[in-house]
Length: 269
Image (cartoon, rainbow, N blue to C red; front, top):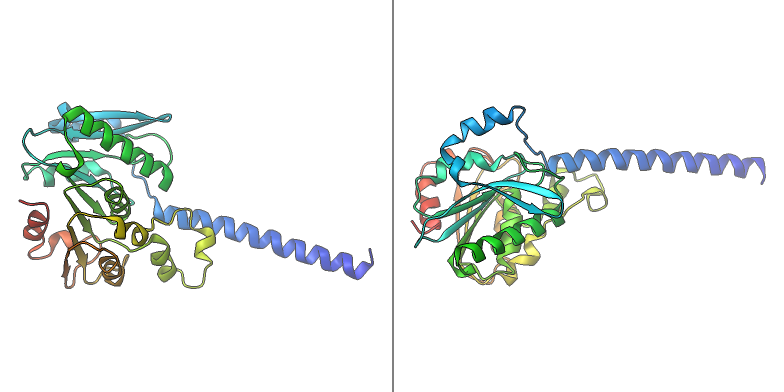
């Protein structure tokens, strides 16, 4: 091989290797934005803080993972299933949801709280569907007795589940139309489709949802701009009650005037 060709080959090989390393590092960085699993440093202290709900704590086993959660059964009441955000230990919702009479199912994703394993879209969806079906069988319920609530990342989970199970209602808090499109807005100069591990295409699942839908969006959302919630709203073929809270940010929507009333109404209380 001529000297110049050998030098050219080495240069391009080096460029490709560097590009590959950059993409790999970026992939890890983007992945950390999708999944930020909070895990307690002290398991005993964690359980003590949640001692009030200890009788309802459950562990579900699936494909080598132990999934920690809570099942609070209330006979004669609909089952509210809550799917949390990317950096959210689902147990933080227990005190807030206690004010409602519904039966409740809250389970941490793989790697979150006391759940083991690593989170991926495929694993989260497989786990969530299997656990819901098991609980329905255990409690003698049918899907039309279920209200799905998904917050942020959890909106992608809840929407996909509602597209394959005929549930009573779907409630979405600060949702996206697609994690892929949201990431493209955040990183406009990166090849997001190549480096984003999971896409959570709620926009593709939404047309298959047959139940009423409520969307509560934050008007000043700095993580998922409300334009994504509006795009998702327009993807549903069923009635959508859309409400946007002016000035609210991604994690402060809970403090917005009228939010508690809107949430209670969305779950039928």
